[in-house]
Length: 552
Image 1 (spheres, rainbow, N blue to C red):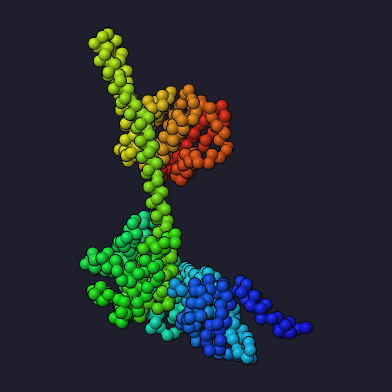
Image 2 (cartoon, rainbow, N blue to C red):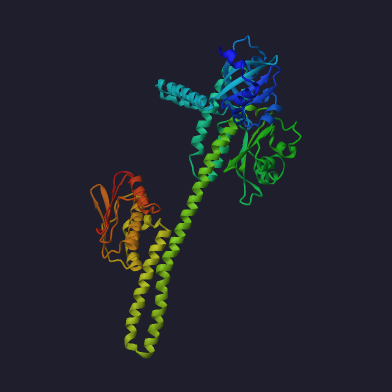
């Protein structure tokens, strides 16, 4: 029994089960060009449900350059060799995905159908295009030995990125279209560098609109972001708009297509503002806008804001432009998320620092002041009843006041670490040591060299290591004696903090205790050496060495 006889023995229910459970991307169309079925994998790839796909014409989800070939393949019959080729499909969000497509022919009850079996190759294709683009660039660059020619090549590449979107539509030559697509792909890779160059949210948003105009050929661009209450859209970045328009932009965002894009989270595309009844002409005409797109930017499943692109020419935001700008918005969403996480981390760090300073104020300065008040009251009482004992009480008050002053100097320095620039590392460590003696009652012996020849960054790293080490000693070590030694030899500065406390197993990990990790990272980031030695009952030694060479 051959394979054909075997297939004919399968009943319809079995075939239905196979089609419904397949993990392949299958699309079945009649010879009239109407889709009749799509597998779940195909639905997920395109972003439509089966019901939605059945309502669409095939040209709606096949990219323009491939529609004629697909239509021709569907009209064929089983006597023709199966069609095999690469096809670009248009997803629901306007982006393109590329598939290797094999079209087979199936006859059911006398009716011919075309069965497309597709495999998603989008990532592979992009990687291949990037490799070719970069290889050609590198080859051209390195084969040019003349410095002037290299500068000229760089200038040509920069000019190429500003190509207007209308080039794609005016170019009928497939080779030129491929070339334009390659340029845009390279522009997106450059956009990644610009978007991830900063962790400040405002700079990331401004980089997004700058990339949109400078690299991808839009005439204007702006970004609106929801306020914290999700009630109003606020302008956070813009490029190419007049000052008057920018001032009124937030007002426009409350209604119309901008509000629709933000509230519904759907892409809005207008090809000609003069022909689309949804457009508020009183707004767009002020800026000469003829075509525009509003692309929602999503964060954690919710709309963070709206990225808007505008063109002064109609019909310049087709499928290819939608794909490119939507891809840019997705890249921007990652950079925006990183910037927001960084801001949150900075906020948490600032809160933790404020809480630590508040604890130190409560544990040291406030208690010292309370002791001073009690001491003064005692001295007043002794002056009235037993004057000869009053001087001892006043000496006690003086000691407390001096300790409080030392503590305040250390806390003020921590609030203003830029004092390192004016006062230097040795002065900063002296204040820290004085505060530790008063605050924790440490028997701390210090030996400090003259001001070392280090960069401000290196001095701050040493100061923070000393601060953390002294804090850990006071909190955990139960030490009788602590030694802090700062000295400079030849081309290196060494800091050592040693105690005779209870020690700990330094080979173990201590989850949640980031102080030791932070100290090591600070020093190793500067190319220095950090060493910690400790064992139960044998005390702890922290040793740091930083080079005083160039840049240190």
